[in-house]
Image 1: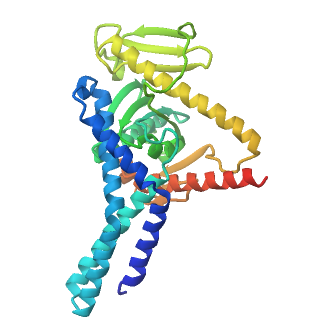
Image 2: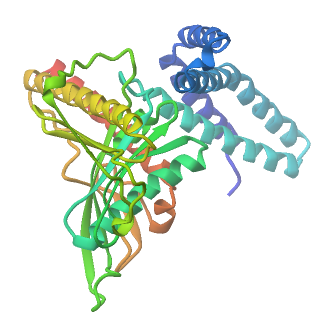
Image 3: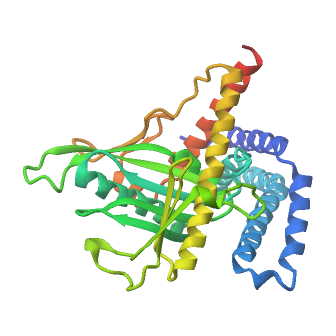
Length: 376
C-alpha cells in the first residue's frame, strides 16, 4: 500500500503539538543555562560523582531542548520534500521521505515518553535490587538473568552501571543483586519494572526435563542526593562487617571489607561488598539505605493520600510480567498487555517497548485516580 503522506504528516504535527503543550520550553531553557554555568565551574571535577551528574543532566536537557526547538522545521522540511517528490514523480525521494517520517515518529514517541516522567524523583539515577523468590535453583538463576538484563539495557545506551552488591546462591545464580544505573531519568524510566516477575521454562536443573515456574522480585528506588533529608539515628543502626565472597564461597579479598547495615525500626537491610575498602562499602550502603528509607517515607505518604481519596483501582498486582520459553515463546506484561515473542532478546536488554508501555499505563492510572479523587 502507498504511504498516505498527508495523514502521516498530520499525525506528526498533532503529536508534536501535544508534546509542546505539556513541555515548558522556557523553564527547560533556563535549566540548561543554569547547568551550563555549573559545568563551567573551575572546581566542578573536585567531586567527580557530582560532576558526572551535572554533565549528564546538561547533555540530556540540551538534547531535549534542541529537539523541541527543531521539530517544527523538521516536519516542514519533510512535508516540502514529499511535495517536491510528488510533483516530479520521484519514487526515490518519496522513499527517503518515508524513512524520515519513520525516524521522526520514533523520536517523537521517545520525546512524548520523557514528558510523562514528571515525578518528584524521576530525574534520578536508579538503584535496582533483584531478589529470587519461589522456585529453587531456577529462581536464583532467573534473578541473575534479570539483573543481567537491566545491565545490558543500560550498557546498550552507554549508561553508567555500578554493581553494588551480589549475594550468590549455593547452587546456580544469585539470591539477590543490587545495581546502580547512572543516567538522567533512570529512576522514572525503570520504576515501572518494580514488582514480581515470573518465568516458565523447561528447567535446566531438573534431570527429568520438567517444566518449572519460578519467581523473582524487582525493587527500584531513586538514588539519594545530598539535598534530600532522611534523618537516620545512628542508634537505630546495626552494622556488621564480614569477608567478601564470590560464587562457591571463594574469597574475593582477605579482609573484612564487606558491610551489612540494618535499620532496626523498619527492618531494612543493605549489604555492600563490591568496593575495595570497608569505608567505601559503608558509604555506598548508607546511600542505598537512605534511598530505601526515602522510598518508604513516600509510600507511607501515598498510602495516607489513598485513604483520603478512597480506593484507587490502578494496581500493580502480584505478578507484573511473565516470561515463557516453553511450551511457546512469549514475554507479556500483565498490566499493559504489551508482549513480544522473543524472550531471549528481552533477556539481552531489549526492554524499551515494555518500559514505554509501562510508563503510559502508569500515567493513565494516575489520571484515573485523580479523576476519581476529584469526583468521589
